[in-house]
Image (tube, rainbow, N blue to C red; front, side):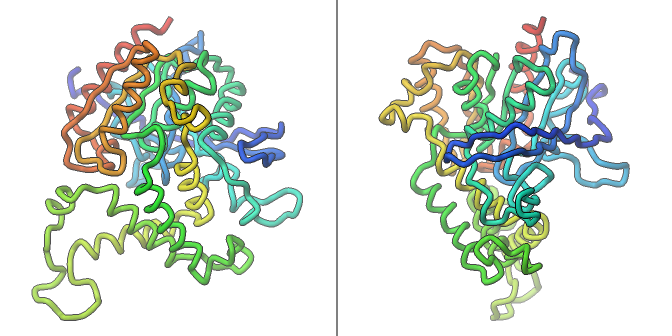
Length: 380
């Protein structure tokens, strides 16, 4: 694979699919109708058998790759892996990225207008689950005439969706790539999510989720939630390497203003996030993470839970990821092997912590590339 023929997907345009059939959610709530915003890259083959669904994580969107204009400085969140000659090769595959239900980037969510009240849904928007997202994604596949995915993949919460696809629709997914994920959250992870939610809920501008009517945004809460999350996505080593104890100014000022580069970076990340992400969406995305536990209805027996999966799997973990540690990925691998599924597992040495799944690490990309070559070879 010569680097000369590797290219980005270029300029992309999102599309919207409208669904007028009601969707019954796991909570018992029913969404009367909904929209999903999505993007596609590459060309759908005549048999519609070369499709890859990319599922996003907590703060992700449908904008997986490419740019919106020549001037757009920020490509899609997984741009480094999608394109001609890249692991998700647009010369071979038709790739779909979807903004999940409850999102804040165009798909129906808490900031959308509820047709019955003509007001934003706000606090009344139902809590959505990983299972609900997979059900909605399947509706999109139906609309696009796609019966089977060559692969469904994602990292973190996206990896949970890829896993759930093999359980909700075992006959509709041939390969699942489950990256930096877990079969459920640890108590520590649930704790981090709760502190982040409390930061938002206790912000005076939150107004119980109906802040739209007050023309305000719970910016402080979102900012704190993102700062906390960001600390947990990086490893101590990655932070040390990037910032260490570097000071923002030449000398210590003995104040509570920004003194260290680390603080400056966290504040920047928090401000940026608070300016572009919906607080109600953040609450729902973290809750979907908390609730996901396919083994729950099998008395905690993950092997029994994964018995219905028929797909082949690539499971990847990263040594420095302490939020979704390699041990959690190995639980998935063990349960799949107990069901005699075909599983490839890679545990990669990476310094970036949980965020490693987003990085263009050569070894990581080589593994995904080799696996996707195999997936491409099976396409009829």
